[in-house]
Image (cartoon, rainbow, N blue to C red; front, side, top):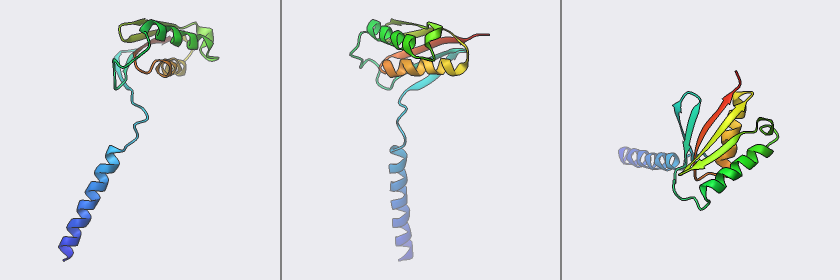
Length: 121
């Protein structure tokens, strides 16, 4: 009897564990792979589902980069080609490069983002 109860308990725990693992935090659906030092490529989980033209998306990214209070002084550029938006320019510190990429991801989440923003040396 105890062995049957133990088996049921272990089975229920295993099911609960599988359920918890599969329901993990999926708020960050983007994947980032470092290609070369200073260059980061980001791809969303569902490429090719964008409804915005790449040129329009790149223009929107650049407009927001140019109006963001932290990034405005650096006049960063965003260019679009194929499924990729390339952001370039020079900033004062690494947090600003991360901010630029985050802005690009928010504005154009369905495109690959290549971050070539460099920190002044």
